Image (cartoon, rainbow, N blue to C red; front, top):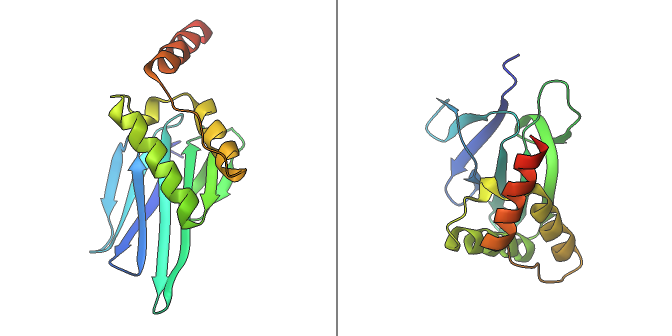
Length: 154
């Protein structure tokens, strides 16, 4: 076992769309015109979005922000993610998915890579949006504090 987490991505325009919003891809395999598999290293954080529609409209809108695990760690299972990951955020329904995408865009606007954000922030976003509250912004000051905490722990 390589220890990598593999994610199957599908893009069938207007029907099934599974993609990564962010994450550090270290391996990629193209399986067909519409399906590819990507791999991320243990400890990597990534956002996996699943959307599907039928003739009557959207039937699924989901976002999972996961942290890839080492082979001996516990994890949550998520469809199309093998073996799974530590769930930092899991929301469904387009309004909530869109709110997470706005939070990610805000982090990008601060010139911070979303995959480098403190995992606790994604849990905060999950909890606030679950309660229909607006999450606090992730600022460069918070990010600097996270980097210092991580350096002390190493």
